Length: 193
Image (cartoon, rainbow, N blue to C red; front, side):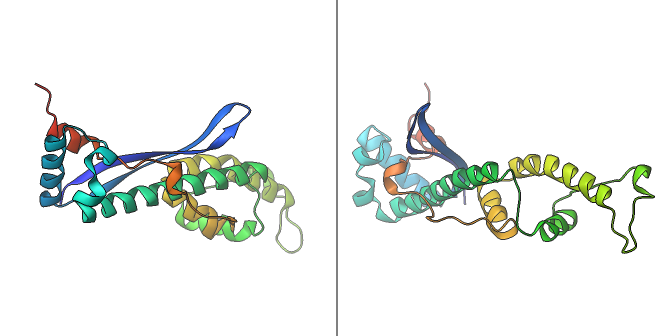
């Protein structure tokens, strides 16, 4: 089945600096038949705008598939926006640092190589405060780069599952974003001459 790129921009309101937006990119998988039906409808109506196509009435299964894909993208975009806000508000601190650090060593590619400087700094229990401080510093410098390397959906799951962040409300309202036909399908209906 063909896969098409889609993207969503969600308006979350206004601030003193202007509109507050959250965005996300993803894909949608459609059958060849669904693509053909969309292309034919777009050609027939002469537009790719969802409302003017009357897509919900004309092709309800395809409309539902598009709506679900956009809703998922919008939900992750909005959740990601608020979780990043919480992350910066807390300066990236977490309640269970040791568990997060262990997870990142084992699953996320975090590495820390201490200098020889720490060799004589262990107490009777084998703990080194200076080593721990240096490891924490390196970790907190690494973490935002790692988080930015994740997709929106992966980052939201990481914040919730490994940093124990919580959201009071989840997701986006359908009023926060617009559903659109993937650009590649529109290009099939209106090829450049």
